[in-house]
Image (cartoon, rainbow, N blue to C red):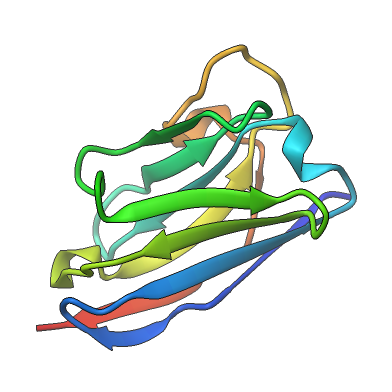
Length: 125
């Protein structure tokens, strides 16, 4: 079955960087859209970045220019490189897959079917 396992979270100071990884198994990750989402306490889960089967990417306005989503097809792994981190980036980060080809790149959680367990990112001022 489809399984997504995130790693790479941690605690950093503002201005620092982190690279999150999401190892996929049970299917070929590059076939469908994959995305990164985050959820801070008391807030809704929001889309951060997504990538489709052609490698086209989409980013939330709040992270544009600071974040890069990529995937290694040989390793069936999704990445999120985050630079210039801010305290407001603090959240649990999740990867997810649509498991369908919509022909466009969604950034809302309702379009994604399978989810990982999350990895915590904490940015201190």
